[in-house]
Image 1 (cartoon, each protein chain N blue to C red):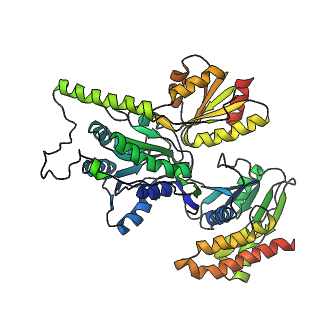
Image 2 (spheres, each protein chain N blue to C red):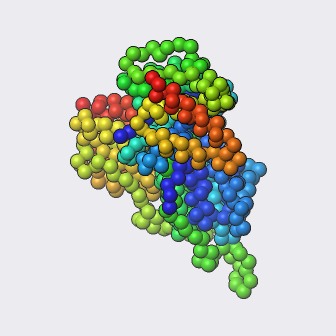
Image 3 (tube, chains in turn brown, green):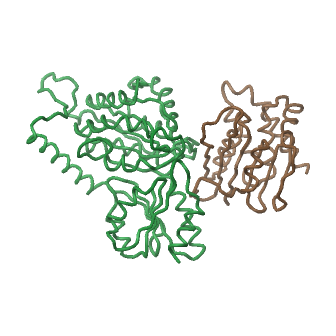
Length: 181
Length: 350
């Protein structure tokens, strides 16, 4: 099994953290993992992305010219990465900020209003990335939800622990939204 | 020991501490700054460690010279333009036969270039970027795990041969995260460094110097260095062969490009093309004999690098005209895609 994922959005939306938690979850599932950030001179408001690979065997190239799944948090990223997704691949997109439908019909597309769910139901719009991650984890077999939760707990320790409840709630709401479909 | 998820730059830093590195001098530059950042955080917590952000790259490498002279395990790190600034100091360190570790996480060049991954500093690292007849031992890891492992080896090799060792990575390797396990460690054995300038109480003073105005004397110094380099060439060549047993086409790649090449070898095998990978791990000493041996069996070589063709010259010297040696690369911080390499392989295999 090998799953190549690209997580993309605006800088500041937490797309790199989505990737890091996926990689940590894969690691605790006993898989090989790699995480490659977009390495441009990025800034808040600019675009950012990362590539994560979770594999049951050695990872050769850490890059993903044709990803299996894409987690898309804004419109410019949809335009950039939808064409790269492999046929039959999974697209999870943030419909709160993307007012268009995916162009392709040969992919599995799933919309989640991540900003709305994060703001209204989880209590903080900044947790929109965790809504997206929860939805992805529920839709994909590449990581277990338990491992994702464990990884999130591991990331939000010490000073960051106060952010754990809202992020955990956002994660669960994202998963619930995905399961409804 | 549990596997951790860690960035390449941080893995080098952690591994340096586990290798007994007590002195670090650097100046920030993307894409290696996380290495300095890690040590700036960790070194002050340890009694025996000394971290300094120097006023420039030139100052940093000369501080390394000083710390190493006094017997410490010392390191500096930078990227392209910063490594260029260090060349004078590196030549002095080599001339003085001092051990140290220098990390270059290459970025796009020439000039100020950009901060994207590149392998365009191969010549500088391997052929001697500074002046005079000297050699660095150059290690080229291709994963976060190997960055960690080779950092420990780098300190040991530097002490063993009293020679500077360079770890040649790139911006991608430095900034990507992978699982890593810190299996290796090492210690600085100062008692063996009888040449170090640690206070001459009860013995004749040691002098560390690279100025020999008398050419007769300087030739002797050079001959001793050359003798050491032959010894390193004899003992320290490292190379990985992948799917080479029955390979008709050998792809030769180092560092991050070897990862992309490996995925192409796997894909080619599925298509029925008998491809294999030769990965030099030491860029100097270069594993020439291994490559010459492969030239007896394969039909052709394809060298792939993130530069305009640098290691390919060493491959051609090793192959010595026996088989065709092709090249494909990308420049200025661009990455070669597996698809581009596959197309090149199919063209050669036609």
